[in-house]
Amino acid sequence: MMLQGRVALVTGGSRGVGKGVTEALGKAGATVYVTGRTVVETDFDAPCIPIPCNHTDDGEVEAAFDRIHADRGRIDLLVNNVWGGYERMVEDGEFTWGRPFWQQPLFRWDSMFSAGVRAHFVASRLAARRMVEQRSGLIVNISFWPAQKHIANVPYGVAKAATDKMTRDMAHELQEHGVTVVSLYPGLVRTEKVMEAAAYLDLSNSESPQFIGRAVAALAADPHILALTGSVVVAAACAERYGFVDVDGRRPKALTIENV
Image 1 (cartoon, one colour):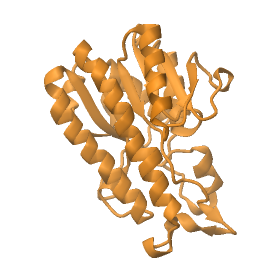
Image 2: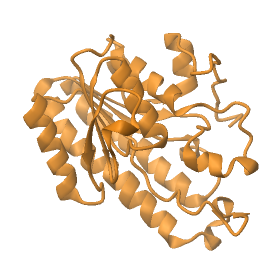
Image 3: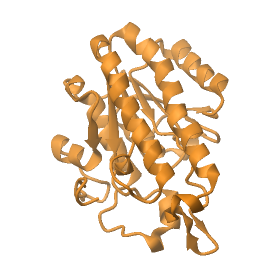
Image 4: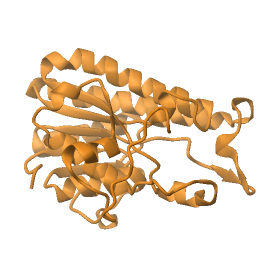
C-alpha cells in the first residue's frame, strides 16, 4: 500500500469530501485521524481513528494534534477540509446559495471564515511545527474555482481566494523546510449537501467524494511533490497525471477557468 507508515489528519471528515478523503487514505495504507463534531469509526469504509473536535475551538484543535503526536510522534499529511456556510442552501423551495451578496445571510460569511479559513490556518500552524522538525510533510487545502472567478456568491469566492493566498504564502515559508502546501480543487462533488440541491445542478461531470480522496492519496505518494508547492492542483487533472479513475470507472473532465 502506497501510504503505509504515513500519518494523516483529515479535518471535517465525517461526511462529504472529507469522508471520501479519509476512506481513500485509509485504503492506501495511511494511519488516518479524522476530526468532526460528530464522528465515529463505524461510519467509514476504511480504517481510521476518529477525534471529536470543533474546529472553531482552538483548545480542541490543539488537543487533537497533541493526541496524534503522543500516539505516533509525527504527522505527514494534513488535509484541511473542514468548512462552514453550506447550511440552508435551499429554503422554502428557493436556492438561496446563489443570491446576490446584499441578500446573503451574514452567517454564511461568518461561518466560512471561522469554520473554514481560520480553521485551516490554526490546523496548518500546528501541523507545520511538527513538519518543520521532520523536514517533510504535505498540507492540502481544499479550495475551489470561486477563488478565481465569480461562482455562486461573494462570501464563497472571497473565502476560497483567502484559502489560495494562504496556500501560496505558507508554501513560500515552508519550502526551505521540505514541506509542501497545495490547494486542491475538486469539481462538482456529489456530497450530501449537493445532492439535496441536485434539482438545481448539472451533475453530468460530477465527482464522488472518493475521487477527491484518490487525488489526495496520489499527491501524498508523489516523491516529487515539493515541485508543486504553492500551486493549485485540480483533482481531475490529478487523475490524468497519476492514472486513477472515479469509483464508477469514469474519469471526469478537468475543469479550467474558462469552462467552470
